[in-house]
Image (tube, rainbow, N blue to C red; front, side, top):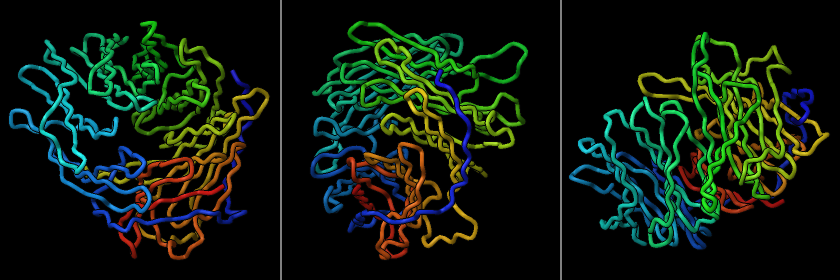
Length: 472
């Protein structure tokens, strides 16, 4: 294991502040205040978004990439089976077509069916559908859930299904590869180690060779100890070899919290995450998210051989600190460094209405080369006496990765730029006073290496898309 070095705690102050060359372009069209659009696809001319999503309908809109001009916005009602609206699964832009994936649960027959309906170029829903998956159960305590997304090369679709006949039997994971023409060209079923109610599968994706990868968190009991504990695995299924590989993330911890899995530029896997303290508390350890430490593993993708790893025990280095409610939000790859960001997030719910308070950040920078220090910093996102010049938006950040740094964009024209060495610099986002009241909503879409699309609000302009282009 990579040697762990001392903790460096920096309460970051606003020194060396300066602006940079950032252009800001606002959409000429105002968004509905309650729409919360989400971008799901883009071609050379336009991008596509859905908004105002409810149980039975949503709106779809097409917006030009260059001018951010709305081409159309249409209401789409969910397709119905036997008079009942299907459940929304996802919407994808694939092979120059827009496809709506929805599921129907027939409780009498104990059966799930997944349908694909095309959305026409003008935004209208085609009523002709394709059945792409169907599964039936014999026990009344069955469970079923889907993950549907594009492959890494965007030339195929992955449909990943998790099922369990009951809480007493092992769960199953099955995946289908859907090609152009909406044909299933490959399918495989995998038996899990535990029932589905004791297993959490996340970070599912498929590479260009139809191999799938995911993380699997298993919950278990320890005799004589209260509460659930966890084991964490990275799983790879190699389709050509018809072989399943699984490796445990063994760091001598048993309370894993948030986990991320991604490919690096060498096509190796990076598994990163955080874990909780050992001591039992009055509240559930996952709910209070009391941070003990962070880790990363680099693994080759075929046999999951560990290439490098690092672990940082926050509580050991700073025993007087209590890192409650810190969530892993981002893992960036900056040359030979793995940069991880944890954010304070505390949600308080009353009568079904939840309000989330956002706060300071923890940055941990793992070098993947030997004989280099692991650096950790605490970043205070607001200073005493600081008065915001903008209203609305979120108190959290919008993340953006350029070629040399990670950028955390905050309301009221402020960003933290974190370089490959872990150093943090505070900068203004833009120079123009005409944008000084621009606030960010909690959504963004990175259009390319230089440009990020953000939902914004200002008293002068209302709710609009904004395009930020960064020049190094």
